[in-house]
Length: 150
Image (cartoon, rainbow, N blue to C red; front, side, top):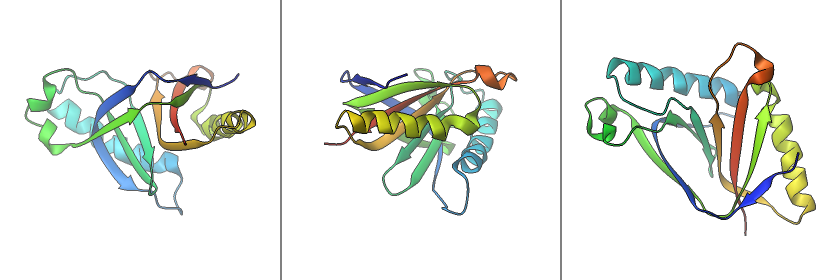
């Protein structure tokens, strides 16, 4: 598997919550904490959304987790209690990880090495888009989009 390079701009406006990464914590635990705050708001206020979890990693070790609202839902009560983050990618690499979430860092490291072998460097932001949940870990799908530096 090789990362694909794209230049068609991609923009997400995600509603959720963010935090500054604590180096003593695993990213996965922080993501679960954030999403554990996000979904009750969506369910309580019946906010229409695409149902796809997204996590944005940005400069300064920030992590933001949430989902994309359906058009018009941003004006509904409840949406105001969520933070809003717009992320734009212009020249970026894309790859898909299939399997347990615990192996995502291994796939990311392999893709980063593949990019470096092509003379490319990763930058910020990086966005992980999680496919629909399944109890069968070997079928979990996560797409990663990472801006290329320079």
